[in-house]
View 1 (cartoon, rainbow, N blue to C red):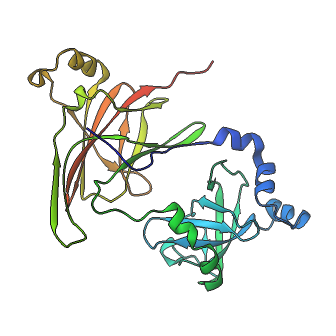
View 2 (spheres, rainbow, N blue to C red):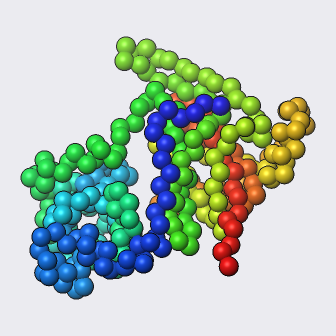
Length: 296
């Protein structure tokens, strides 16, 4: 197995904390120097005026033009409007567009902050170059360009009662990867790995029950396959390292989550093997699901 060299993060956005602070936290976050006027905007007309930044693919972020603070936000599919109040799609927003954002005022505490309760967005200006020059550095800060020489990494994205969770898969198994180096030469790297049931280190996640797990790869694969074994089968396999004794894994149906990512419904108590296939090669990833203890 190879440990991912990139910085590993485990983003757990505690919505419970955000709810405890509620709209008051939003007022503080969006207050700036405008005082009472800004508070009225949170309560009424709109929560924030922001510039929209995107790389034209899947990555985007907003910057509050009053506080100059970056934040993530979900764009509502049916409540996105042009300057003329006509419905538009997310693909119609361009980097540098200025928007007004309405929402429930609940901000998940993180950096950048996350505004999951956006209910409406209206574009008020297109491609403001001044804002692009001033805030464009956030795109480089938060969205690192892909290194084609590296095997893609995988994050697991899922939602629980009190949190939106992104868990990095810090270990991957066997892989074959081909890329072109700086000298224009084609390089192929291959690594073998033990069977996933023999991995000593494996990413663990906890869920409250069956949960939809979205697979966020750093590079979108052409195909994904998933297999699983019970936790008990892994325990037995660790006692006997004879690969011939390992049972065949159960194939798991791969669907898509609402963001179009490959996804599975994962149940607690299983080891999951994820196989990704790209034009440049293929790689194996794994994680173990545990059941979250219920708090009485």
